[in-house]
Image (cartoon, rainbow, N blue to C red; front, top):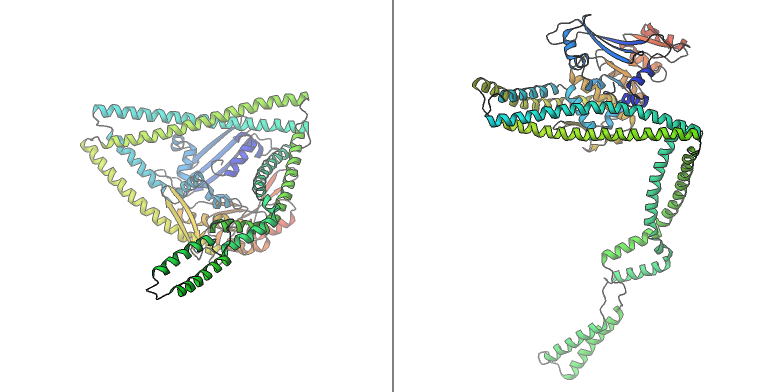
Length: 632
C-alpha cells in the first residue's frame, strides 16, 4: 500500500518502518499472534486457466514479524501463482497496483489528483492513465517484438560484430546486475534510515523533556516557525533596505518640490532654450542677406536701417522673454522617472515605510521569542543525563548522515548506469541493423518489423481515440456533478510522448488553473476523473470509497449521491460516518441503491463487532448506539 498511496507511505515512515506500522494498527488486546485479511474474486479471467473463484489472503504474524501472501484458485494453490509469485500474479491478473488508487480511495484525499505538479508525479500518473486506459499492454507488446528482433539478429554476425555485440551485451547485463544491487542496497538503507531517524527523534524528545517542558512536536513546530520567521525577516529587511535608499529624498521634501517645479517648467518649453548669443549671430546673418539683396528689394539706406531694426527688435525682445538658463537638462525618460519617484514619495512611501517598520518590529519580536524558546529547550548542557543522550544522538545523527550520503551515492550511480545502459541499447539497436539474418529468421524479422510498424500506427490511433473519448466522458461527468453552469466549457487531454495531462478551459477558451479551484471543486474534478477513467477502462472491479462526502456542499452532495456513487461500478462500498459525513436526507436519497448495510460497534474493551442489517433499519439501529459507527 506504500507504493499506491502517499498517505500510507508517510504513515509507514512516521511509524518507523513497515513492521512497526503493522504492529501499531493490529488489534492490541487480542491474544492472537496471526492476523489476516481475505478477499474473494469471482468471474475473474486468467488466460489459459479456467477458474470460478480466486482467493487472496495476506497474513501478518506479530511473533516473528513476518508477512505472507497466499493465492488460492478454486480453493487450491496453483503452479502459476508459485512460478510468477503471488505479488506479480495479483498485479498482472487481478489489478495492477499503479491503478489501484482509482478503485480504493479516500474521497477526501483524492484532491491530490488535482494537485499534480512535478514531472515525476505527472510521469507516475501518466503511467497509471496508460494502464487503466488499456494502452500499456500494446506498448509492452511492441517492446516484446523489438526484443524478438534483437534475438533474431544476434544469430548471424561477422566475427567483429559478434565480439562487439558480446561486449555490449555483457556490459548491459553487468549494468543491470549493478542497478539491481543498488536498488536492493537503497531499499535496505532506506529501511535502516527510517529506524535510525525514529530513534533520533526519540532521543531528541528525551533531550527536550529533560531540558524543558515542550514536546518533540512543539520543538518541530518552533523550528518550522523559526525558519519561516527568518525567511520573512530577510525579505522585510531587503525591502526595508530598498526603501531606505529613498529616505534622503523624503527628508528633503521641500527642496524636492522646488526641483519638481523646475523639471515641469523645463518640460513645458521642451527642455530647450535659445540663448541671446544665438539670436545675435542669426541677426548678423540677416543683416548680411538684406545688404546683399538691397537693390533687388529696392531699399535705400534709411529703409534698410528701419527693416533691420524691426527684425532685431522682434527677435532679441522675444529671445529675452523665452530665455531660461537650463539647470537640469533632463531627457524625457529622466523627467518621467523623477516625477514617478516624486509621486511615490508624496503618496504611498510614508505609509509603506511605517507599515514596514511595524512589521519589522513584530517579526523581530516573534523571531526572538521563538529563538529563546528553542535555546531554553536545550539549555541544560552540563547535566550528565543530557550529555549522555546528546552523545548518543550525535552519534546517531552522524550515522544518519552517512546512510543518507550512501543512498545518494547509490542513486547517482544507478542513474549513471541507467544512462549508460540506454546508450548500450541504442548501440545494440544500431548494430543489429547492420547484420543479416538467415532466411527463416529474416522472414520472422520482417513480420516483426511490420507488426511493430502497425502497432505504432495502432497505438497512435488508440491514444487519439482514448483521448477524445476521455475528454467527452470527463466533460460529461463534470457537467453532471457541478452545479455551476458552463464553469468548465471544454476538456483537453494532452498526450505528449509518454506524458498524459488534463487541462480545463472556460467559456472564454481560457485555461483554468487547477490551483485556483476550491478544495470542493478539486474533489469534484478528481471524482469525475475517477468515474471517467473507470468507464474507459472497462474493468469491472469493486470500488471502495472512504469519507465519501467530505468537502461537498448540499447541491454537490446530492449530485454525487444520485449520479456518481450508484453508477461508478457494479459493486460500490461506501464507508462514511453517519450524521457527520452523510445525514438522514442524504441516506434516503441513497437508500434505493443500497444492497447491504452494516454497523461497526466498538465496545468499552476496544473490540469491534459487525452487525448485518437491512438497509431500512440502519439509521434506527444507529440512533440506539452512542458510539463511532461506520456504514458499508
